[in-house]
Image (cartoon, rainbow, N blue to C red):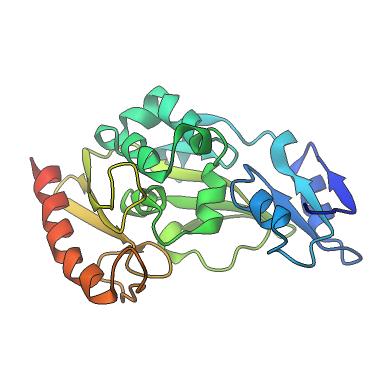
Length: 249
């Protein structure tokens, strides 16, 4: 079990940023803890002196907002995947795309803990939620000592500060996910997420690179017990076609 020297639970974003900026100790942010707690307990996250529990920050709301003159759905970074599934507006977006993606992320106990911000920061290669956010054209709000910044998820690099919200356009007509997995309950080996908005369609893929990517980006599929590199590459075209056919219908 991890032995931590410090534990902090700030109540404001500036307080959290100040704690994470300390140089005398190595403090890491803790949100849902679906990855960090396991890493600390198995001691695969060496050098961590303490955690900054973000649970006290007011970042869980899901609400409609106007950004750059356009209506969007703002998902607070601490909103859990269960919160997203249970929110009427989020659950209805693109024909229930986020609910379907969240169900593919893991069982209900994981969805009760995993946060929207955690999904973005972790960027796991087989995350259907991350792929769905990409296909939806999500923008990520980050807050640092320099202020607030809004960046398209597709362009997000190293995160400076904290992810505080994810913005999604509301005017999305349809969405679909095509996936292959060892069992229906497993995370996907490969998945394609398609979203239709007007006459344009956007496709995102997961399981074919270090993190989910938009269709057309360079692919670098892993070769593991779930599937070989060649198999994953061959499934991209099949799943893309299935997702596009479903979203067109």
